[in-house]
Length: 222
Ligand code: DX5
Ligand code: ZN
Image 1 (tube, protein in one colour):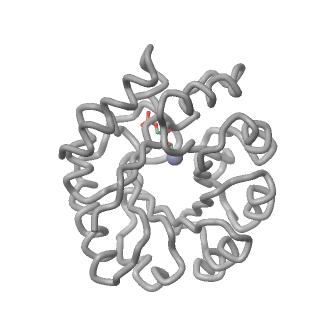
Image 2 (image 1 turned 90 degrees about the horizontal axis):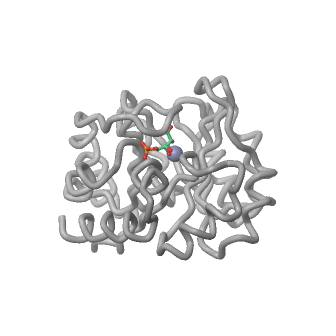
């Protein structure tokens, strides 16, 4: 059965000098989750924010914090983010040598375990870990920057992932990240995604609540 839509604005596009207020604004604006992009200057060129910032924003919202680790050796960050109040912790398949162990470790800390795939990484690479996955995060841009264009070739991949999850009886959420906006979200939702990251499509707009409501309506009606 289709899951309720989750809209997860990415604070990557927020004003970092005023992050507490920016988190409260999307919370009050009706978002479902807070998407938290961690970049290490190695897996991707930029460096963003770490577990100390997660801890700092935690008191500003009761909504789930969805940590997306775009870092090498993600297993070294998991405990710190669990302590900092993350709810979902997502690692990239491409840099997780012992992926099953890493996902089980996230779950052992009482957190939801996510696995992410770059646009070029096949869906089949996660087929054998679905028994310990709560979230599949498909990148629809090459990670590293907000405000990039949605790669339409990923739409087929979303369909493939949807079919794989359904066939396996896997209850994981299917999240899409990168270039999701009012022009693209219906295509993403129709392909089978239920969870939508939106950075510039929320924080780039003057009225966050209106932007979130518009995205939700487009996804629900797709
Ligand atoms: C990109 C990040 C995304 C980014 C999305 O590497 O993982 O979460 O913030 O930004 P938009 O929605 O602007 O493409
Ligand atoms: Zn992200």
